[in-house]
Image 1 (cartoon, one colour):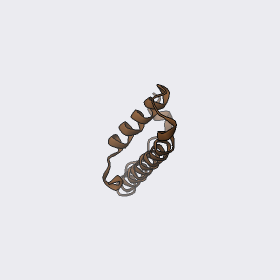
Image 2 (spheres, rainbow, N blue to C red; image 1 turned 135 degrees about the horizontal axis):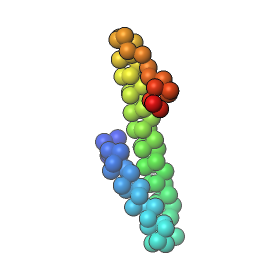
Image 3 (cartoon, one colour; image 1 turned 180 degrees about the vertical axis):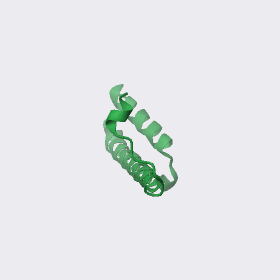
Image 4 (cartoon, one colour; image 1 turned 135 degrees about the vertical axis):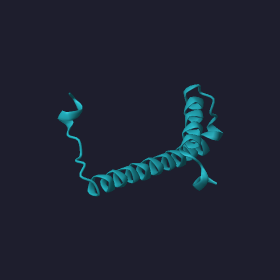
Length: 79
C-alpha cells in the first residue's frame, strides 16, 4: 500500500521508471500506467519531504523558543 511506502522506496521506484523512459524501454501500451505511477510516486515523495521539513521547523522552533539560544545568523556561519 502506498501509504506505507518509504521515501527511499518511492524514490527508487520512480528512478527505475525514469531510467526505463530514458532507455526507451516503455511500450506505448505501458506508457499511461508508468506515467500515472510516476506521478503517484512524486506526490508521495513531495508529501514526505514537506512533512519532514515542517517537522524539522517545528523542532527547531521549540528548541529556540524554550532556550536562551538564538537562531544563528548567516554571518556567524560564514566565519
